[in-house]
Image 1: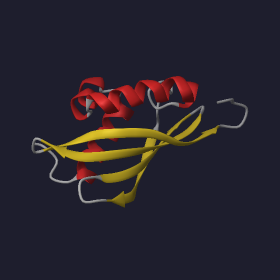
Image 2: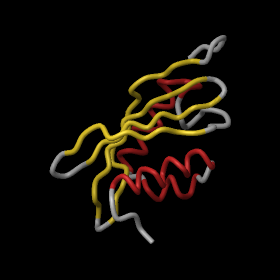
Image 3: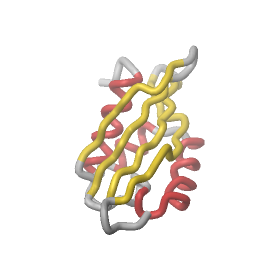
Image 4: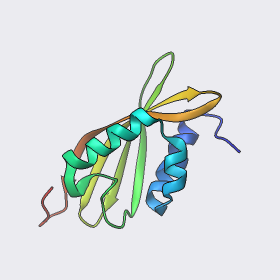
Length: 114
């Protein structure tokens, strides 16, 4: 069953990231956001959610709403630190899709480097 709200879709996607469920993550993302995610991984290094080892959890917070999109800040946590991303979710052909993603902040754990 598809999520009824953008928040439900964002929660499902964050849970998939934590679980390492790449097929679920890919099903939720638009080609434009995939390109942004790949660029984000190169820019953020080890603290990109795409490359963080053993993500232990996440926190999701609403960050804004417009007529056509909802934005959430998702903070992923692992042993090497935290990374917060801004995710823009839009309805695409009746389904909520991750249409944009960008790094908001990275916070290395003590003794780690970004």
